[in-house]
Length: 144
Image 1: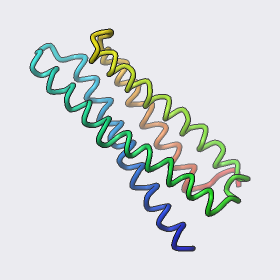
Image 2: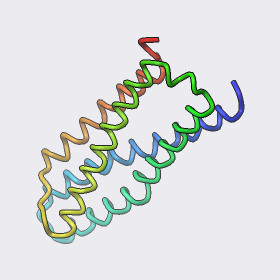
Image 3: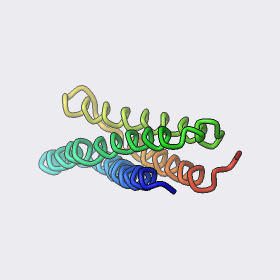
Image 4: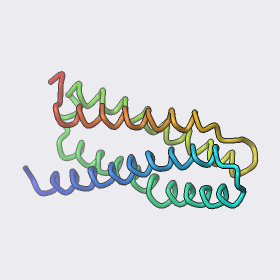
């Protein structure tokens, strides 16, 4: 394996850990924010949510996507693999879940919406299932 590919894979995995780990935590914090009655606790949870999204989730997503592009540039033959097409479809869905959670939080911050804990918990479950499916595809490379 070439060194460039190894480093791209390292960056891809580190990005995934930050993006999806942060997204799982952010979804749970969002659920807690919706369930919390204390204004002080809500303010603290909102600050934590903002820090998670800006400092961990979105930088992790950027690293993941950029490293993924680098991997495909280094190994363009992956573009002919069905497993990669399925994986990329799941990644697009994951990006949509990320953007929806971010939009809900911003609407809450702006006073335009309340957070429904069940909605945030559903997003948490969706992220976990997407992560599992993506890891299975990346490691086992079915359909090859």
